[in-house]
Image (cartoon, rainbow, N blue to C red; front, side, top):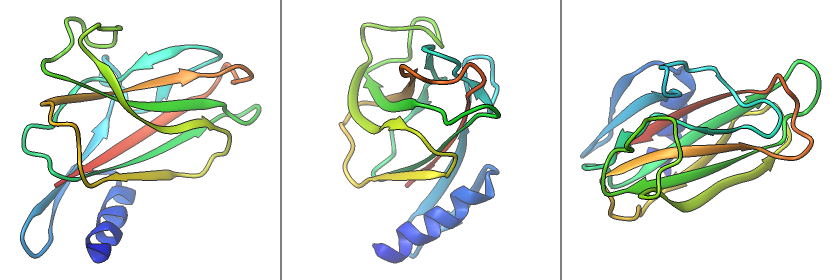
Length: 150
C-alpha cells in the first residue's frame, strides 16, 4: 500500500494525464479544472470556486495534490471535497445536491504542493472541489490541482 501511494505521488507531480500500473490496478491521473477548463484557477480574495465535476464511479482510492500561489503575499484558501449522486445542474455553481464529505486543507498559507489520500470514499458517483478564499487571501491567488484515482 505504501509503495502505491509513493508511486501515485510521483505520477501526480508529472502533471499530465496518464495511466500507471500497480500490481493489480491502474492509477488514472487527471488535471482538475474550473468550469471553463482552465487548470490555473484564480481564487482571489474571498472568492468561492467550484471545480468541474469528475466521475468517481469506479474509484476505490484517490489522492489529490493541490497548490495555491500568489505573487504578492501568502494565499489563504481552503479545499473541500464535495460529492453527489449526479452532475451539478450548472458546472462551476453552488448545487444543493453536493455535500462536503471532507475538508482537505483549511487555510492553506504556503506555496508548496500539498497531498491528501483517501482509501475509502463516500459511495457517491460524482465529485468536485469547493475552493474558498478565506479572510486575508490575496486578490491574485492561483490554485492548481491534480487527482489520482485507482
